[in-house]
Length: 434
Figure 1 (cartoon, helix red, strand yellow):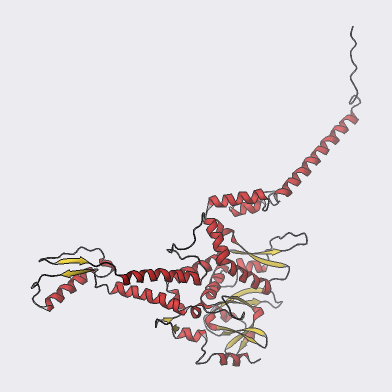
Figure 2 (cartoon, rainbow, N blue to C red; figure 1 turned 180 degrees about the vertical axis):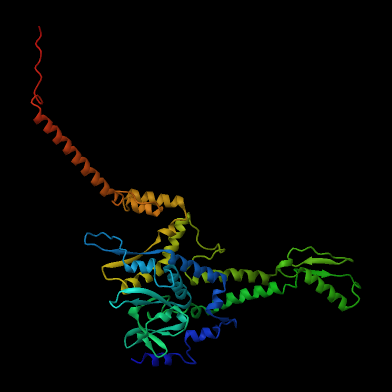
């Protein structure tokens, strides 16, 4: 299969690869501003959304469960569990790996990690691959990832057996691939390509605000001088220059001014155009939040309100993080685990923000009998106790069995005592009346 030739055909002047576009600063939006990954991440709402989602996915533990014949699902601490939660490779922690892959998936549409295997085919490492250095395509019905060689990156540890010319040719079975929104199921869509004008407008608003502040020679007021106060336009200009020097810029905000010789100052109100500009900035924050599946961005109060932190976190998990957790677990189960094992994110950590709600939640779990004592204690970071691995109904059954056994033992002891005592069980003769 001539995959290298196919890749070169896809990277042309009319259809450049993402890495080539990024190298030249990205494409222009309708605002005329170039929008790239770096410029998008320079926007506070974008950075907040990416950090929030990637950070929460990264901090959650990926548990491995085994489905037994009796219907139970005990946790398994195998080598895959250690790869996902303890040590994924020699230079990264699992938190860093998951966070990096999520940043790639959120911004560039594709989060990838090469699966390093030993001679037996057992996974022993996960190596992140930069999206700008990789292209995914379908060749003769098979999915492949072509990774460009790039010195100084973690992906350089990919074995030379995959090397084909200047690219590593990696089959999909050896690549964890987390896709963002996709039209074909083969590769994820670049969020900047999807909404370039949204980012461009937000970036233009930010740059416009910065320029306005930097060039804030208009101090928000109009100065009026009596006729004949300035002898020449030069004197008037020197006065204005001195005034602007003392009052323009953020560092001079609120500084006292002095007017003389009958000069007056009129404060200029915020114009309708300026008001629309501020409203547009808020609207841009809402658009960024929608792009990333968030109900709101910090500082934006237009989203839904909830009764408690736990209720809000539950909605956030279901409405935003849920799709990403399913993408992760299905990739892990299909490429790292045998069919008898399954992966699941532990969302307990995200539910610990409200102690009162967590206590109420714990009480309900205990009363309904769906969690063991030790499972509930783990939610509160408490050590397990002996006998705490049974569900409430199992504990009740065990207690009843112990009581029945103790009663039977007591009855048997009483029977043995009667058998060994000749006087036991005989009636005491009644005394006759005189």
